Amino acid sequence: DTAVSQTPKYLVTQMGNDKSIKCEQNLGHDTMYWYKQDSKKFLKIMFSYNNKELIINETVPNRFSPKSPDKAHLNLHINSLELGDSAVYFCASSQVGGPDRSSYNEQFFGPGTRLTVL
Amino acid sequence: LAKTTQPISMDSYEGQEVNITCSHNNIATNDYITWYQQFPSQGPRFIIQGYKTKVTNEVASLFIPADRKSSTLSLPRVSLSDTAVYYCLVGDILSDSWGKLQFGAGTQVVVTP
Image 1 (tube, each protein chain N blue to C red):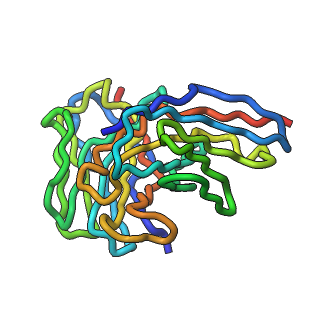
Image 2: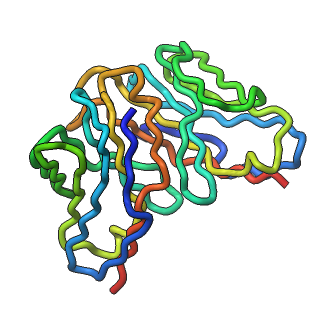
Image 3: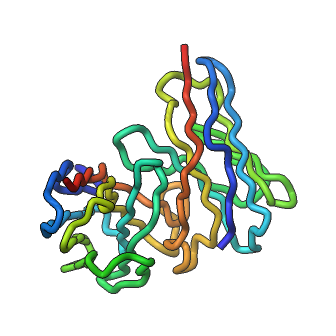
């Protein structure tokens, strides 16, 4: 009954490799997000998709490419991994524009994927 | 988007009340104030949201003065399990720009016995 799930939970890889992180939500939400959290706990948005359409693309290297096959999935593909890509990546989802439980546009986060680039 | 400022860290003992103040001087008319909590090795989770005055739920209270230029998250009688990072976000929750909100570094609350 997990709301937002990510795989894998841990990812250790060498510089220069290409890797993907998968995200799925079963909440029926229209909007999904990818966040990056660095070692100082700074949580920064990378991308946002609404109904499979890209609506937010912050200043992220084009080595990062999100893919949304349907509104329940938002995968993150990273090419040519660099040391600075090491971080925890969180996927999230929300329903924009309407009450969700006790709040408007509450974001539900996945458990995170800890990426380590060696 | 409103910029927020909150303390980097706060320490408390079990059973005490913890109050975290977030400054948001350029808050806009349509902006709401939302707080998230993040435990170690987990994703953030929503705890409370408000527009003005006071909001209370089973987890926390949120106090917002009339000018709305700041807000205070109050955690009553904290326990060790309240040790977490707390993020304050301010923005128009019904706007597409809501997703552009940056969580920042948050406030690390450490509760000790």
